[in-house]
Each structure stands twice: as C-alpha cells, then as structure tokens.
Length: 305
Image 1 (cartoon, rainbow, N blue to C red):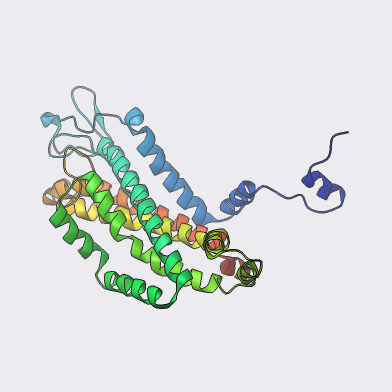
Image 2: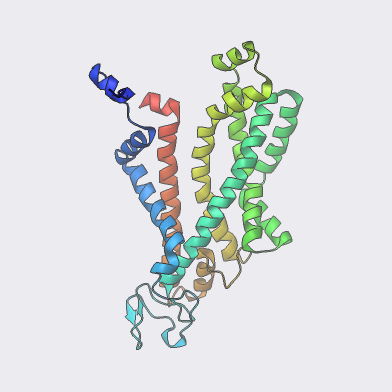
C-alpha cells in the first residue's frame, strides 16, 4: 500500500491539510483588493510588452500625414481605426503606447535587478562586518542619498549620453543606495538573532552565516523594495525621455510621446493624456503590488494583522 502524503496524514489525524506556498499566496492575493488590482495592472502591462507586436492595431512607426491630429475614434479613408487618436505625423497613439510598454518594462525590470543586486550585496557586507568598514561604506551612501535621485541621473545622462542601454546602466548604477541603506539596517537586526548566534556556536564560518542565515532573513525586504523601485524607475525613464536625456527616436517611449505632444496640448490633448494615463496607471499598479507584498512578506505586518 503506497505511503500517504503529509497532507493526507494531517487530514486523517484531524489537522488541516497544508497548502503549498503558491496556493497560500494566491489565496492571500484574492482577499486583497489592492494587491489584486496591482497584479492585474502589472500583468496587463507585461503582457502588452511581451505580445505587443501581435496585438498592436497598426505599426507604431507608420506615418500617415493625411490622418494627422485625428481625435479618438477616427476612421480614415483606408478603414484604419484610431481608437485613441493620432499624433502630428499620423501615427496611431494606441499602437505607440503598446510599443512604449516594452521599453518601460525592460528599463524598469533590468535596472531594478541591477541596482538590487549591487545594493543588497553592499548592505549585506556593510551591516555584517560592521566597525570602521561599515561607517566608511555608509558615509558613501549618505553622500549619494543627499543628492536628489532625478538630479543625479540627469547629470550623469548629460555627461555620458542618451540611449536605451546607457539609461539602464545609469538607473541601475544609481538606484542601489536605497537598497544598501535598508538591507544594512535589516542585517544589523538579523545578526543578533538567536539562531545566528547558535550558528557561530556550532562552528560555522562567517561567510556561511552571512549567506545561509542572514541573507534569507533580509531578502523579503529587498523584494518589497524592488517592487516599489520598479515604479520609481519607470517614472525616471519617462522623465529623462521627456527631457531628451533618455531613449532617443525612433524607439517609442511614453516619455517621448509626452514630449511630442506638449506643444499640441491645447489642440490635440489626446497626445499627452493617454501616454500620461499609461504612466500613471502602471506606476499605481506597481505601488499597489508592492504594498501587498509588504503585507505578505513583512512578519511584523502579518503579526499585527
């Protein structure tokens, strides 16, 4: 007779069956209106970025000067439908918003992964080692945090130059300081926990303690921070592209669409309204999802709930 699983054994013993972590997470998400709304928005933007060319109604770069400045809902003589209107070159706004989602997702995710990796390692080493090294490393962080993030990025972009790859490196290379400060504080608390002290008593080496016991205890804070930083990075990319310091044409970005439409805002409001709405909704979705993740992953918040 085959052996029963642990869930079956718990049910026979009168104990509630244990659900997998994925099922527990999904159950928590369904019960949270904020988290559910954020996940739906983020999932929709990611799907647009992945499958945009397949669902885009028109070529985002195709020009049609006969259809310039057409209001939302216009149908031209060729039967092309401009659901969100067209711009000064007759390009479909909806198609360009879909194309711009790819840049936003790429810049947001890759930059956050880069800055998160640097910041987590920096904060982990600083908090774990402590002493003079910790003080020196944190003074560097304090100096960078004293400079407004967007000003620092603009200054570097103006010197290095614009471009998609350059922008990712700039945002990733400047956004790590927030991770470093947060993770360092978490490490200072975690290294005094009983199980960490027990690991030392059992003869484990410092690198083992740091990677096997300290890092897993602080990684949830890094995940929550990364979720929020994706929204910050998308805003930074849009701002730089709007100012001409980010991605350059012919690549389509929401910031460039805002820049193209600002001089026509009185006569063709849809050129700025719909890209602005795309930025706002995306950032709100990321913030909602990050707020839900904080509630799920932070043990202190779970304890109060």
